[in-house]
Length: 241
Image 1: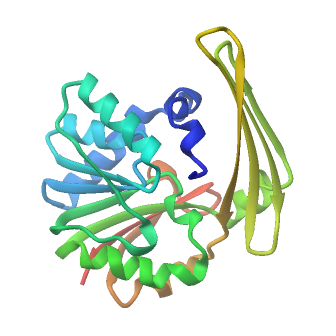
Image 2: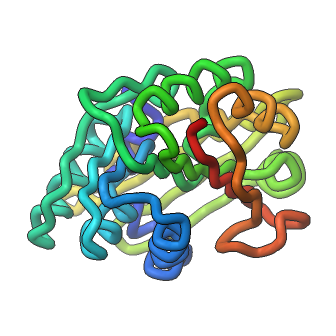
C-alpha cells in the first residue's frame, strides 16, 4: 500500500483551503509565458486536480502517480467532468514514458518524498521524457517549513464524514508523519486507516546541483510567484538543455 492510498477519496476535500483554481491558474499563465507547448505530464498527480484544470484550459494532459488508488479516483473525477485525461502509474524515481512531452509539471511536494541521493537520477529520467527545450516545473516544501512548522507537531481535521489526524517527528534529513484517517462507511460506522509519510529535506544548492547536468533553471520563486525568501514552498521552473 502507498501512503496516499487511504487519502485518495478525500484528498481534494481535505485540501479545500489550498485554492486549486488560483494555483492552477498560476501554472497556466506560467506555461503560456514560457511557450511550453500543449502536451504535458503531471508527475505525482494524486487525484488529478491540476491535470483536470490544464485539460479544461486546452492542454493535452497525462497524469502519473505511484498510487493506483489515487489514479482510480483521478480517472473517475476526469470522466465525471467529461475531460480527456490519460492516467498512468509511474514512479518519480525512475520515470519512463512511451513518448516525450512538451512540459512536465510536478506540484505539491512530490519530490519531498524522494531521498536527496535519488534526485540526480530522478531528474535525469524526467529529462529523458521531455522534448529538447521542454519545461520542467516542480516544487518542494522548504527546509524551514519542514523543520520549523511541520516537524514535531500535530494536525487534525474533523468533519462529519471523515477525520484526519497526523503526528510528525523531525529527523536529521526528514520529517515522518504518522497519519490516521477515520471515514464513515455506508452503515454509519467508521473505519480506520493508518499510513506513514516521509518527507525529505532538500537544501536549495543540492537541488540546483542535481538539476545542473540536464536542466537550465529559468526561475526560482516562492508559492504562486511570491518571493522565495520566507516562502513555505519553492518553485523551480527549468528548461531541458
